[in-house]
Length: 340
Image 1: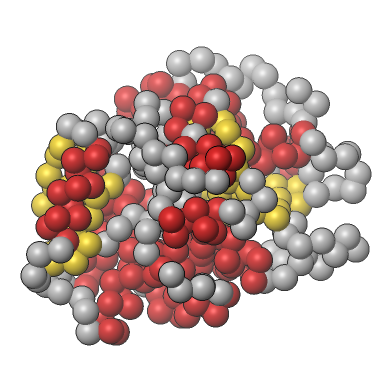
Image 2 (image 1 turned 180 degrees about the vertical axis):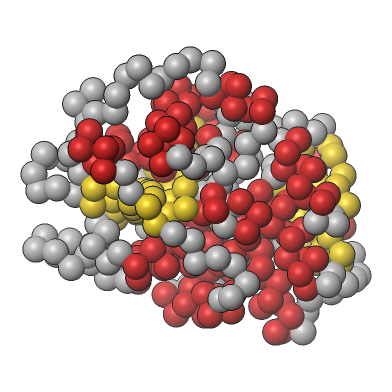
């Protein structure tokens, strides 16, 4: 396994520049006053295809083209956002795409994948979708574009944090959702390679993941020092985190993080509602995992000095059925606070 560094993420940023959006960073003064700290939000929900996954998929396929290894057809397996990203990048680069998806994947994400021209094949079990995609990807004339287990996927995902820290060097801690670990891995590389925040504390920037408690294979893997895997997609509302396991590659980088915080479903719904309310943005439940993790972390911090945290809002693709589930209980009657 190649040891990736900040230069690899910077190369990915140069490769995809002009093809993906340099997404904005926004804040909520109201939320900062409620929590007593400064929160910045990197809006990957406003990215091409509505998620950070566009970065990794495009970077990988452009890198393959540079290497002369991009075939006429690519294959992927995904619960939704990576599917869209591969389909979109394939259309942009003039190659065909076949995507294997779990039958319970978001209807909105499936329709969007097909709208980019990809052929979508549904399977009842996520494990079957992954296996068949890997088999097709090994055939002549095809290449598998995995959702997280690839160096160039990781480097592409790391460009989000690299951008944000370039725009806001005052950030002391970064929070991201965790599914297969590609975004966490890239963020670890980009953040640790960018040095400490320029403040009097002089401590290294920290990186934390937020993972659904119902899909906590990554947190368990860190605790047990080995890859823990689910047999089938776990039943969390965070469909972007319904992966079966980390890979050896992403576990390696996850071990360099400052921890993975486990998020209950009601906390995920709580922060999805509050972020939509305060930021006036469409955010899918997976995208709220980082904020839920940041809230846990901030609750353990002293009131002074004020901390500055960056939350990567990973995506904004949610269908009506999912949002009904998020809004089953009105969480806006209970204001955010680090004193809860």
